Length: 294
Image (cartoon, helix red, strand yellow):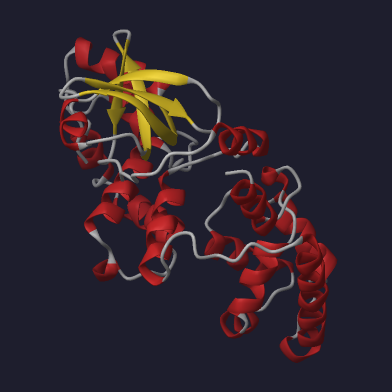
């Protein structure tokens, strides 16, 4: 984990590592069953960022907040006060770079809210040559905004105002490094922007086929969760890790064998039926809406 600030956030990671069983649980929540040896450095860095900022321990506190309360390294009051400011103001989002002053700062627009921030960042602004998009976490310390956490992933793409308007209307919530890692993992298997844009009729027909596919497998796999109940669960999901989401439904009537054997069906159901966090759209519909408005 690197950033331009002189605040020793690495100490919070070191503190978290004194609780290996908690870190193991967090790892499984973040990566599922992925073996550690398959991790890439940038994925691991994003996990560590999520671990100290977003992961909630059994008491409901993050490692950052717990570190502030306990101050195990006896840091001076000034540093702890800076940590408090970070905890109070930090936010993770997708940002579009609007303006750059090399080696000093850039203006970042939050794609989900439209709000702009002047973010002080020496290293990042030194090598970025033009406007683009970065997922990342910012925080305000002593009246200045900084990038905090893992090194940001840079995409040399920008969006039209109509596209950004549609993105804000969707009002995606709970954006986190988990989303960034899932995107990076997906890029390993498929280049960006190759998903076909489906018409409303195609989505409607796809849903009919998926209902039939699911229902014809219910007896074979001993499923007690109806397709309608499954769709309700998908609608209410709250940006969880998709693998963890399916695992949680085993207690409600899915079976592990069905999840393993019919992963494609479940992925298609997830992508083609509505989600509350997408304002009632399916991921396929949200994708089509944004692409046609670019």
